[in-house]
Image (cartoon, rainbow, N blue to C red; front, side):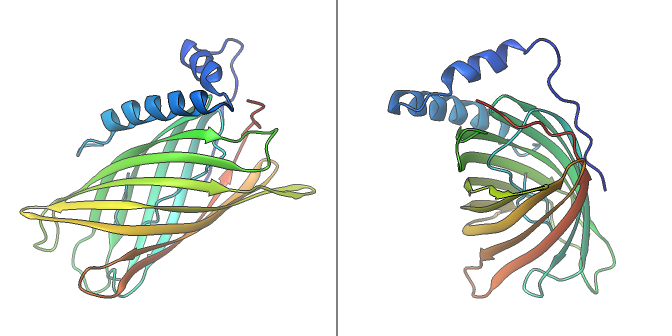
Length: 242
């Protein structure tokens, strides 16, 4: 499970320049950035596009630049269906915008087949960077899970806001975060909208790091669908001075 970053080419793409110009601390700047985020994320949040079944909704409010590849393991609780989930993600960070695509495979306990989810998400950092002690982002994603175990295919769409306060620890970068949001699930003729949240942390020891998260989602019929996930990565992630 690795994360490999290819960072900061010699010339920033035009989109990075535009996002940099929009990275303002004034109310007008924040409104412009939020409007751009909504437009981009609404386009990306289609049924084919990321809530991977059996995994947390991973997030990193401070974001980053370059290309990263991640690997994850998750263990859902009994209300979720238990079992084990494995996944991989690839992300592209351009200034304050991060686009992610990934796939996950979850096999519940006692199930004869596993579920495969393919999707992606987009996260836009509204506030934060190397000069500020906290970060705030908006995240929207969707994923399509195939049919298995006589269960119809499902589309999941998520929308969340993320808050993080990186800890100033020597020799290690620690980014704890909290990310509440809304989850929409569509399966055949059944549609549900639930509230959920994630507590997580991203740790970096130079080139090597870890990430972990606990995801909890309320169920209308009672109970909570929870899942704990962990992962490890190799990271060339560069800090942002924007």
